[in-house]
Amino acid sequence: MELKENKKQTIQGIIDRLSTLTNRVEIVDENVDEMIDSFDRGYPFDMEAPQSIILHSIELRGYVHLSRKRKALLCFEVVSPDSLLVDICFYGAKDDVPEWNQLGIKSEESADFTDFLKELYRVYKFKVGTISMLGSILELFGCEELYPNNCYRYENLSPDFFLSERIPLISIIWNEKYKRLRDIPYKYHRFEEDGILIELGSFVEWY
Image 1 (cartoon, rainbow, N blue to C red):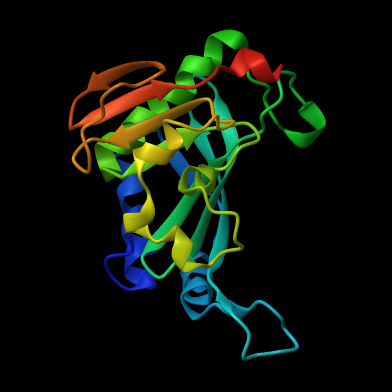
Image 2 (image 1 turned 60 degrees about the horizontal axis):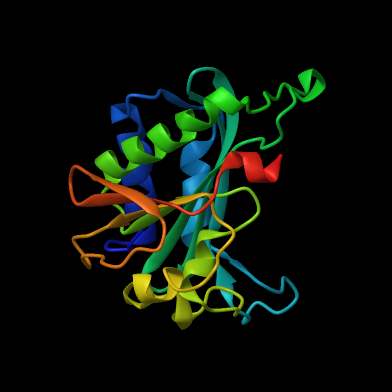
């Protein structure tokens, strides 16, 4: 997502709009305001060198109600001066792990995650969103630098790269307000608000 305002306002706005999602999202951390303040201040990459690169990162623990209630981590990281990476991380294996209070992903539940990504798009109108098992959305930039780095600037994200390269993602939602796509070499469908869902793979490939 784009960092249009200051960091604190951006992350607070994202958290506030979680309540408008059809799929209920619960945050269980009790000190969220303190954690947001810590995110805003940041911390040095090298704790023994305070003048090193300042990182802005936060992880919030919670639950997301899909067809079943799932544990999740909501992760926020500033990856460039104008780009915020937002990850909602779930346990990705197919088997339940009761001792960790984690649910596996049954084959018939894979559509839950696609529907949830589309719901997130409807609320946040992000430029691009993905579903992956091992890949990262940052691979769409074609940059191998550590972040934060200017190569991950919001304006550098272009479908010209990720439609021509094989990237280990399951699906992508691109906002065609930024660029109308043509000659798409994958299965896709368009939906409301300029969204296009592109299917690069499937959950089955990872099981």
